[in-house]
Length: 315
Image (cartoon, rainbow, N blue to C red; front, side):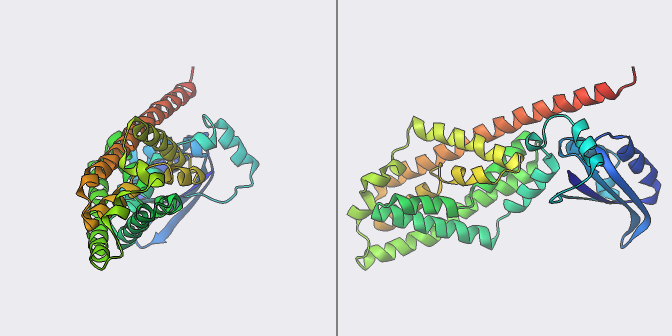
């Protein structure tokens, strides 16, 4: 179940309460007239089955509640109620498979902003990946993959292409490109300094059989990126965080950027192009797969919602 807290203008309260009470997937509806003081409005509370949440939120948007009032959505740890169980049973599908588009969009808008935290984690991941390539240590490459936060803007791009959302697309693209450029801008001079004082050699930067896959992009690179894109999007849309770790250590995005920065700093220009091609292949694979996965999910849930509306029409 999801919990709704609404600030509703007085002239809309009857329509909003009627909408919620008429929906079989909504329960525990409470109304507090004048419950909000700043700004003024009626406080309306309700619980909605996760599977029915998107339809309810769309209906509330249709009444302009999000513009004239506010809509807050939270997820309680537990709702112990036979009435809540009834509402959940009335909703189409299963809770684990439900996609609440407003929640996903809100989360990805926040996670795909270009912040100091995002740039810092991406830069640290890039440096770790560079050390991993220099020392030919796959465990460091894996660590860099886990630290890197780049999947959030990739997922935001997929969502923006699916809905579509122009502002989200621009934000995510800028965050991804600016983040990678900032990481390279920090890492490359450090590797150049290491080469200048003799800590880093071109031979070490360009050899290493255990991590050579980073500079050897092929069809498998694209295939793995496609699978990772599907898994990552499913993990986000179904609110399952566990599989995301597997996604992070499946794609060669941060390792490619870290290797490119290392090679530029050490003067091994012959491998920079291969590393950047690996980056491009992985980003393309994840974006294509993630967008197609979201489109399929959107189509499926539209059919669920349509079937539910048809079943509610009096015969």
